[in-house]
Image 1 (tube, one colour):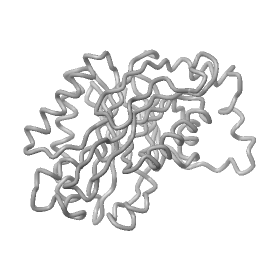
Image 2 (cartoon, rainbow, N blue to C red; image 1 turned 30 degrees about the horizontal axis):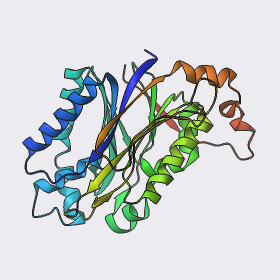
Image 3 (cartoon, rainbow, N blue to C red; image 1 turned 90 degrees about the horizontal axis):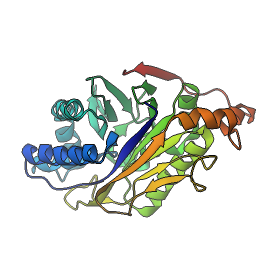
Length: 297
């Protein structure tokens, strides 16, 4: 399969009362993605932080909310694996804090209908994560070979650093997923411009999925602004501005858009420009980070 529909979530952070409420919410969202014809559903960075509301004692505390949400990671993953299997969808679950030894990392997980799971940790942390929240960067950087194609993940801030996506391109990436969580439109635009630049440089697709809405009860994800977007390089067969689909800022919704990964190979071979091929002509273009290719087929 090279041509398929992607659903990118503009996912609202809500103060849920119980695990049952969370499970019902996820079920409804995935059912809507499947009904819209999606083969891949993409959720945002830190969308799982709404689970902190299930522990009223710690939800207003930065450190406490990390621990309470991380403790639910196995339960969250079982739910997503079941939804992927039942609906025949690939699902990038909302990233969440996961305990790694004596610290926490920000982890995204890609679930396949067959039951295989790919894991990508955020590599480069924002000032808030490193100075106030004490979430640590991790790795390695990966590309996932799936039935849909070769998928890479740059979690939010990671998309603003071109060598990461470039290394993934050289490892075969055709589609870059950019789950994001930004508390201002400045942040949203930084990540959006990063995603679009990575699509241009790598002659590939990039998909941004943000958190939206106000959550005054949470010191971690209290304000969330942005819009989902599906982007390609502005070249032959693509929109002139590279924007394949774009959501309404701050609305809670799925954004649907169709991609055809056959376009990636065609543009890299015979585009109006050959950014991907000519990357190496830049002074200092090497070395690149190591990339681990994981087979999820």
